[in-house]
Length: 238
Image 1 (cartoon, rainbow, N blue to C red):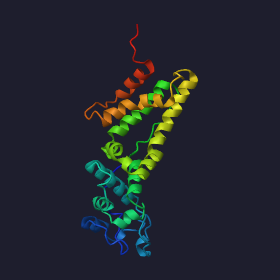
Image 2: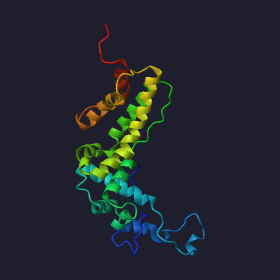
Image 3: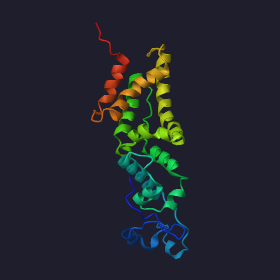
């Protein structure tokens, strides 16, 4: 998700008196806001209501992520602060989300790195793909600091905790679970270990490097190294 570069799509109306309008943007936009610029006769037609603003939504979600990363606090985040950071009014936010927790979940989803489609050619290749997706998620600046906030504070917000696991964690784990089950079924992985143990062995190293070892490397070579260690075991060969 790229941060919004303009607020021109956020048009103040009497129904939304708290919008913080940038005079420079307003001057650039002029009378064309809400007009279809591809229609040569659009200027002569009556203006419709407020245009749907995907740009404003992107600005709101990006502002939420920035404030979460900056303050490292869910409790300290407010809709008012997000509105000010995004350059919109509170009403603009409440038209899209019923409250702070729904907004945070939407921002977390927006920060998700799209999982790589598993090729299915080999267990190692797919395992590296899953680990690479985790590595990219850990270093993605859009969600920088988000994992720490989630790990340290989200349990104090039961509904947010439930929704985070539902829309983020379980989606990731389902991909990994299916991959490991395929490895068990093919005989490439031990079938005597509980699935949850195997999943923790795969995901644990990157999570530790992100959340516990602050300056630990998350270099591109790491997924392959971890995959080889997991598949080959760590016992010395005689």
